[in-house]
Image (cartoon, rainbow, N blue to C red):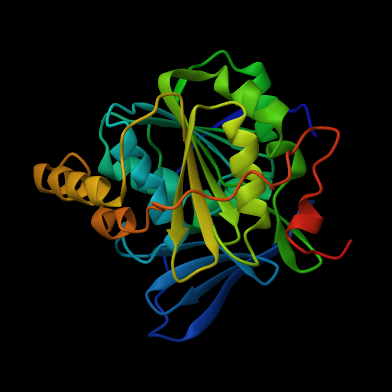
Amino acid sequence: MTDRCRWFPATPSASHRSNGGQQLSVHKVRSQHSNIYVEDEGACRVLYFGDNAESRINRSDPLKGGLKYAEHFHCAFLLNPHIHKVLFIGLGGGTGPTQFLRCYPRVQVDVAEIDPAVIRIAREYFGLTDNRRIRIVEADGRVFVRRTRRQYDLIVVDAYLTKAKRNLIPPHLTTLEFFSEAKARLSERGAICYNVIGMPYGITSAMPRAIARTMKCVFPAVHAFDVKPSENTVLIATQHRPRVNRSILVARAQRYKERGSIPFPQIVKTARNYCDRPLDIDSAYLLTDDDAPVAQLLEIDE
């Protein structure tokens, strides 16, 4: 982990280039952490770490064209509508922060991103605009959580690195100790939202179940969303126990959307992906700083 913490104001993005539906290489760079590529694919701009898509955004409308898992970050507002201060750990192309700033005028966003190349690319190629409501810090996410004295209503963890041509969650961001440190930075009804590779049930569920079990040791409730058709699970750990199920969340999403409380266009669709059936965490791995075999749980060869 690096101990650097440098604050950056966001700056206006570069102009976008239309490609008439053709795939076009826009930018590529090798950073300390990944081989990074920016490509235009039809109406969308895509950020790749190696061969893996990390962010996607419609160049004319940031509320469209995003990767499915990122749409589920908005479901945190269904569990706590009073979210005002948000920390993103991991920036990518900045899709999540950009959408939050556009949808929720009262939200202020901090971002902790370890790779300065990613920060530059999000500004120059993904429309992360200059805004007093967002601050970006070049730092490892866990170092930032330890050092900050800010309180957040929501912490979104979406940090990945590339190993053996596949995405790998940084192990130190998966552990019991990390979630305890993050909880100390949350407001009374604050929550942690976590994007995890793997489905909530079945043969690819080892990683989501392990993180859910580890979260459950720190938080009273952990909610899961099955991100279809991609093989991702979004977990939301809350400090209170809201009485919810899929039908309640869908009805709430419809009501909030009609009111304009959650103007994100896909909120009802994402609410339908709530997992009524609990994840099997009794047999799942408990992740600690001394023992967090993330690569094995994701079946990545060392």
